Each structure stands twice: as structure tokens, then as C-alpha cells.
Length: 246
Image (cartoon, rainbow, N blue to C red; front, side, top):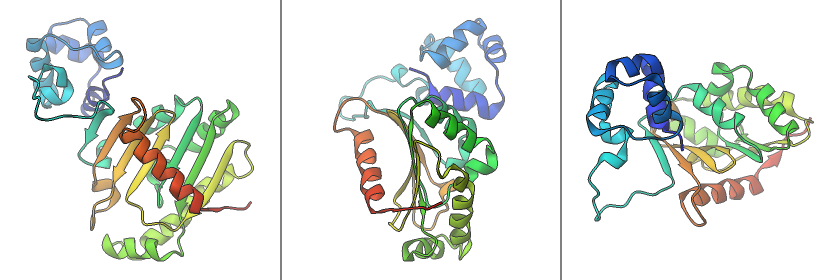
């Protein structure tokens, strides 16, 4: 299991495996195993790495924390980010690129994806060509819930424009086998970015733009967990959404 929190901390600080290895006194292969295989370094080494990255050592390697039996953390929780803006777009790209069966996107607009990664449609088209079912639900710019969200976030009519822009970005995918695009008019409590058994959940906070709200990264671990709660929520919204015609 990859250590997504460590990967994000290194990416945001411009750290390479070799550079962090030099600072902590290990070889680059060890750092690579921390990131890609979820290995936990020795406590002293972990503290050196956390200090260099300016991160909480227990946030990077929760297993180093003494267990607290009175407090449980879901085994499905991989990482928590203070703000959506803290995630590099590569997190979303890597997530979608690794999908083999299903990609779901539920947003009002989410135009930051196309703005930061112009090749998004090509990636989704390629995944669909490999057998993935791709479902994309964007906000209906004419719906009262979208307009109300603009007022709550002090975004005015900007959010309606961004919904239309999102639709424009995704329209080239209309007619691609395996890809379906719909618009929804629901109250959006969370934006969802799912690939197979993983999902990025961007919570929505009253009065706060989505980029300033938290994100948690979940991986499914059996039935009835947090992942399934959000997957079921997507399905419920999808069933109310309207298909976009070409």
C-alpha cells in the first residue's frame, strides 16, 4: 500500500527520493519503499524525515503512534488533506490512470482538473477504451441548488459559469463508448473522484470554496465502510441526473 501522505509531502516540497535519503542517512531505495510500498522506517529515521519535510511524524507513519484503544480510525482512510488545493493534480491523474473497471466523477464544476491537466479527456478516453466504465456528473447551471451554492460561497453567478465551462470541457467525450455524461441538480455535500476501490472525497463547508475545504482519500476495505457510503451516494445522485445529449 502506497504512503500517499508521504508522497504528497515530498511532492509539495520538491523532495526527491535521493535528496530525502541523503538527509536521513539511508539509501534512495529505502525511501522509495517508504513511498511505494508503505514501509515504516525506524523511529529515529522517521523523525529525521518528518523534520526535513516539516510534517507530523505520526501523520506520515501512523503505526509509530502508541495505540489508543479508546479512539478508532477507519482502516479505509489513507490520507486527509487540509485543503483540496494541497493536492497536486498528479494525485487525481495517477488515481484515474490506475483504474481498470470504473471511474466516477461527481462535481458541480471541477474545472481545476482540465485547467491543470489538459490531457484529462485523453486519459478518460484511453481508460474507457481499456474497458473502464466512466461516469461524469456535473452541476446543472440552471438549478436552484447551484445558484444557492454561489450565494453561500460568495461566488455569485461564477459557479453557474463554471458549471457550463465544465460541461464544455467534457463534451468532447460524448459518444465515446464507455463514457456517460450527465448533469445533476442535487445539493452537493461532497465532490467525489473515484477509481475502482479508491475515492477522493472533497467535503463541502458552508461559505467555503471547494479548493479551501478538506479532502480525504479512501480505499475500500470490505462491505459497509466509508467507501461504500460515498459510492452509494454517487449512485443515488446519478439516478436523478439527466443525460447530456450530443
